[in-house]
Amino acid sequence: MFRTNVFSRVLILGMLAAPLFAADPLADFYDAQLKGVEGDVMGLAGAMPAAKFNFAPTSGEFKGVRTFAQQAKHIATIIYMVAGAGLNQKPPVDIGADDNGPAAVQSKEQILDYMKGAFAFAHKNIAAVTQNNQLDNVKSPFGGGTVPRLMTASFVTAHSFDHYGQMVVYARMNGIVPPSSLPPAPPTSSAKK
Image (cartoon, rainbow, N blue to C red; front, side, top):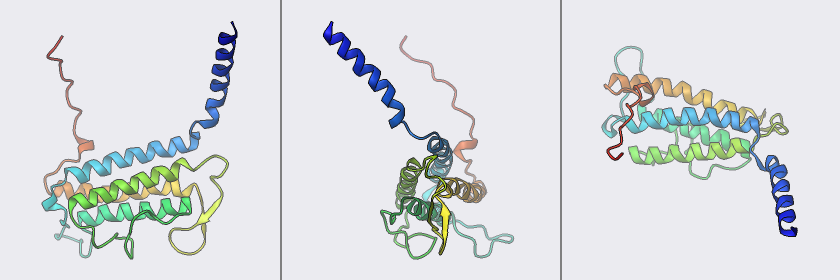
């Protein structure tokens, strides 16, 4: 009887304490948005052939635009900058001298790794945003002054989707359909029943 009583009490205490350790609903909301843009951006970057990473349009009003690779590196660099501001930390990697990322990151594989790291850093930042600290000021990632911590969660998605749209145009100009635009794969039937 004693063991059952102790077990029941521990179980009840565990259930009562679980909400204390659950992620903040605000962080969950922004993390879900980040996961959406991450899937789209990473999927598109993965689908673009390595030989086309340095593509930039030339017909029309495209003088001086970033290449596909530069768009991807720019997204990642801004993510590192913004997440670092939210966490009050330096990014865990070299992000280069400007918002175009490190010059040493050149190949498709290097760029994909750089982007994966940026999204992981952004998830870490968003996990630290709570209803209680969302309006706390943090140093602006874009120069002097401060911004509310919540900006470091919301800006990443908006900015990333802006450049994702440009990357979609580049991909389509090269005959690549963004994975997020493809119809879902038909369900596979099991060979063993």
